[in-house]
Length: 542
Figure 1 (tube, rainbow, N blue to C red):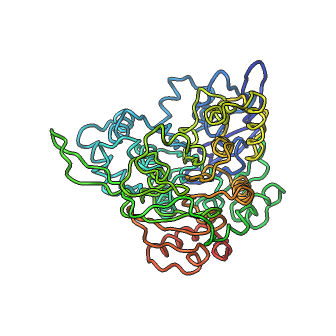
Figure 2 (cartoon, rainbow, N blue to C red; figure 1 turned 120 degrees about the vertical axis):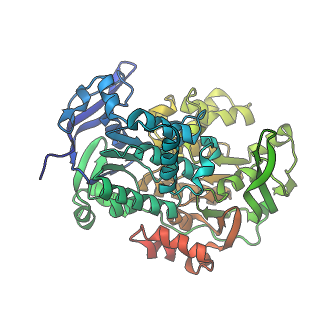
Figure 3 (cartoon, rainbow, N blue to C red; figure 1 turned 30 degrees about the vertical axis):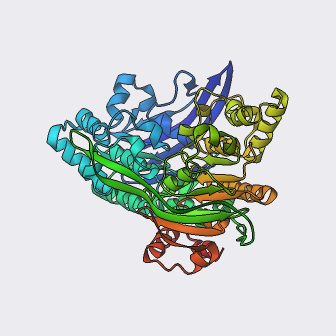
């Protein structure tokens, strides 16, 4: 075998805070050959992302340091490079896609400008040639009508579309090594399959190597040649994907492979009172052009949707990115304007002003898709989770409020002793659990869950599903569960609606819809999802 493109030898990473040093990565070793894909899998906080960030020296130095190890890329030790030298490697020889695209993209720059910047700095392209290349890249990563998205800003794109822009940006200069930190987390299943095929095609064409970080073992089986399983900062097992899945040696690896959401979803409650309903709901965004910014058309994000969710039920909302799922959820919470009646717990809330809505907010909560964007970086976890209690239950003493925060963190599987830390000190999955705790601490009646498990590894994902189901049983909670992960939807949803281009193409009881989808689009969506899973039949059977 030839000399590997990347060789990580005995790498350790430690973080120093308040005079204490914590070892996050402990003597990790692996290598990647040219054209090969190596997957890093493990629980949130196991050291996967920290290992990847070390390769490009993107950790917060000097708070982070390396007690041991070397990272050799084409024979050169990256850890020994100066900042000037490593800049020549970043974005050209090695590129990286991060887990949360909203924090990686500049909110003040258009899509075209951000991708052009990489092409100009590392590729020497400018003007019309650079614009043409930007359009090609956006088309390759599955963004429809890419010419119309050149002037868009990140906040004007869906979560999945933002991630696709990040992938286009990373692949702009055809790197030798592509580091992908959960690159398909925010993508729906059909686009996920497209992106995986795209990455495999690029590897074949460019001889590009990949370090692929994911919690989705279905993706590992589809795209990776070898896999390294991490736990507690160490690699506990590594080898060829086929060998690891056929005969895992380590107990943790066996537990990871066996982990998936299980159990029966809440049954339909035809006699229960309706918690939230709407009829013919529309959310149209105007398209303005010209000097006078006249309206020349509309983007029909939600176009004539009707639904009713009863107490104790879970409505699963599935569909491609940009289909209107999140927009629908935000409208029901009165977080964006819409046209059409919205009734919450028997009271019309459409048209209520901010002050009139405020007392109702305690009973309707939301967990957003991007936890890093929804958690204040200036507040500790205790302050974030307890903020709603300060607003809606000001009579609570500081001790009682802290006890509620501790209980909420325990419910979502976080160590209460970490509540005085800040969001950037947690992994992506841990941040999502903080977001779930913030919503549940107020004991609401209705919760919109916008991809709440997308950032979580398989084992924690199964635990969160069990937690949500248990909370629902205890408190008769009503959920709207927005997701592209059909395994999770099958484990939680009583009813399902399938959305496409702002419209509902199919809806019905979850068990019936999973067993016998009628719409060609629904069948295509399910086929794309379950083709990534070896246990597809078991999921459908739920």
